[in-house]
Length: 78
Figure 1 (cartoon, rainbow, N blue to C red):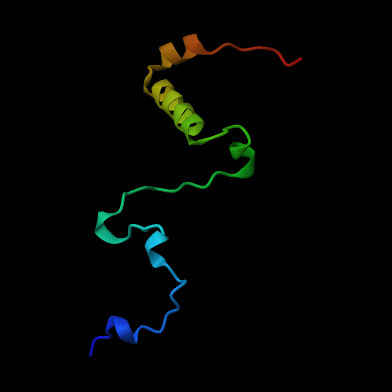
Figure 2 (figure 1 turned 90 degrees about the vertical axis):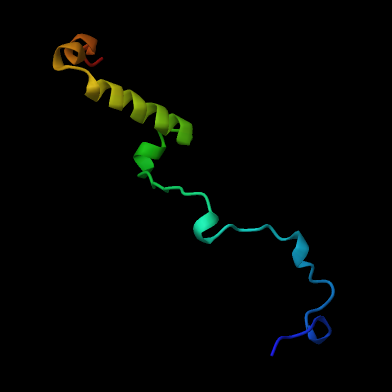
């Protein structure tokens, strides 16, 4: 038995038309949430910086060992 609009016991001041729509189910955007440790999060101000750092690391890993050694500069601690 379905409830009709007249049988609604919600107060008129409750306006649900202004609530945001939260996408759930198959239609929602797929995303992965990664939580950074505090020491890592202190270095990267936002997700763009994390992605940039990871892409740089990916490029370095794909280089041959001789190319990688040529890019490394060793400095003495001050």
